[in-house]
Image (cartoon, rainbow, N blue to C red):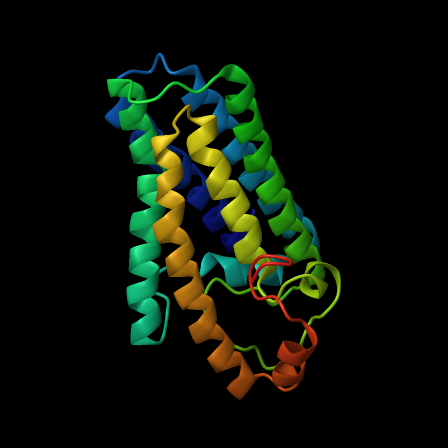
Length: 225
């Protein structure tokens, strides 16, 4: 196992422990079947994508390993990534608190639908990775990078963020919380701020991106915006 693979699996382990703490500590119980199923699906999807990247696109895996506020180069993106991390934490903590204090009741069929959205969101992100090997964890342009306009990039200009929103919508429902769905509001605002800033950078730094913006009308959500 090379260093990149060790770092990737180490990251998965840390994420598993981190998410377990976010879910079961605020819930103050491990008797939380919605939490176990949601985390199992979330981590299975993340692990599956990681294994695929190890085999088919290790360069993309390395790009994805560099992420978060500390890895960003621009101050504005450091702030945006910090806010995004806080919103991500809330996506798991609020539903866990909802479970503990029984603020809302979500029927089993809705929980299953939430789990399906989590998987669907990951599948959409996986599609993005298969089409675009330059989806770095930070805003940057590689020396050999080119504009991708096929696959999901023919629907919206930022399909990975769209897939992430699908997944993040599913998480609180899968965890059995209607109140947790409200965490999608700040996360959506944060992603919009990030993609607007990203588009300015790409139009300036990536040849052909300005023309691509003219060709593909929708930024984040197909047929909406």
